[in-house]
Length: 157
Length: 286
Image (tube, rainbow over all chains, first blue to last red; front, side):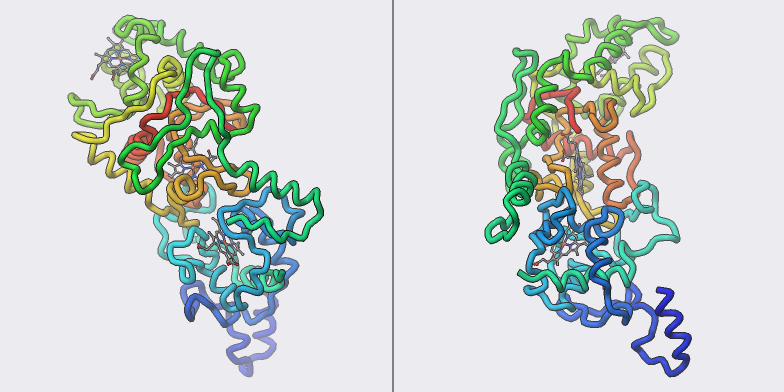
């Protein structure tokens, strides 16, 4: 995030939309479930995306998905489909849409929305069981979403 | 969901994947007889009110590892039975300003074998649905002149374990109609509500996905016929409301409190989803 701020400042008033701030969780635009525009304007880092998918403190996507390429990560769940080849089945924009809020693409999906901050019933403060306070934010930051998407597009059979 | 064909992975790895997905994914085909004599119904036809949702109901016991299941089949191996013994002492001990013990009014604890299966239950005098905990505290304060027990405290959980243990062999049979119906409806509403930032309802995990793995956890139907359960994870007895609390917390939600009207209603509803399963408490889970 720091990088984007510095760049924007350096570019000064010449900076155009490409250097604008992150797209806010409430301002994401969907086209049939897909989000074509990057949330940050900064290319995602697939290596970090891979870490996020496997880390139960971050995306913990493997709680529900198996990914053969990540077979070094133990205990992968099977509530959701295998993600092998998902980068061929979906475009980058579709994958971004699925990670941001899968319910737009898949009605009533069990998959949590990773970049959303409103519309929850009794939202909590992390895993404390207490009510959310003003530190409440999306499950993943905009750049983390970009990193995850960058990894997902590499999943080809 | 599981596409195992076309996996291009080395044999050993494939075996691991098979072990976590295919083999462990389904509940085992096994029967439970405690101490070689008391048969427990661990799988049976779903009660009518679940028609359309599921056809068969199963105890969480069927979803646990071999060692855990075997441990529960013998009271000498079941660590939960230590707490049952403590509660038996408490059952016979006079307490409070009236100088009475539970046994003075109710006789032997073994005579209470018809009680656990019907709770939570409508109490006509009080005009409310009562959990076993609420009834026990009512006896303590109004019949014995003793202090209330903390809802999920050791004394209380131990006593509910005793009352469950003497009911093993009987099946869950809570009433959901008549005056209990509105509470039951409220519990059902809670069961199907998607709480928290992860936006998940009880049904998302325990109705739509039982048998599947969520990370390292083998999802059961979330039945409460085994409660209170001795968990190997925290090596103590856990009440149903503590379990509800943990499951809601894990959806990144603000939970309800043990003993709250919401959890009383939820308990009645969840119990009714297990109508027909054997009382198992104190069961063993991980």
